[in-house]
Image (cartoon, rainbow, N blue to C red; front, side, top):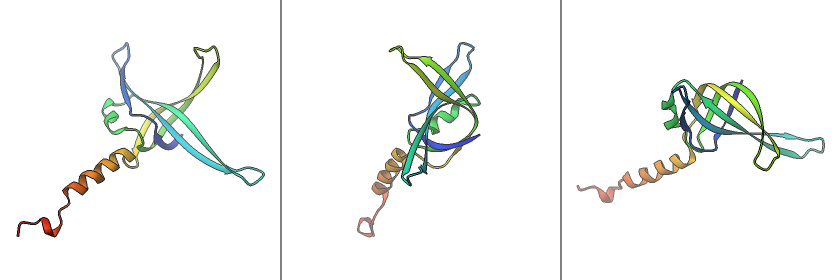
Length: 125
């Protein structure tokens, strides 16, 4: 299965009790459709993702980054601290394709680029 979405938080690397490292991150996907009344309905689905192949990818997975993921989906259910039943989707990622930096990094690059641009008035000759 493939999903495309934006990271909702920066990736974290965790170490299991067997000394294996896993990268955990969350992705939001958006979908829209028209109901019987012709109204456009927007739907967002959140996936908790795990990636076991290499922890080095965590540096690239920052909040807002658009990614395409391949892998498999599983569900989980638990009881919250308030006693309410909860459910979530896990995405066991086998392949990550980056489709651009986060909005935060694009803003930082634009700001840095603006500082480095020189006009003709700034040239010494």
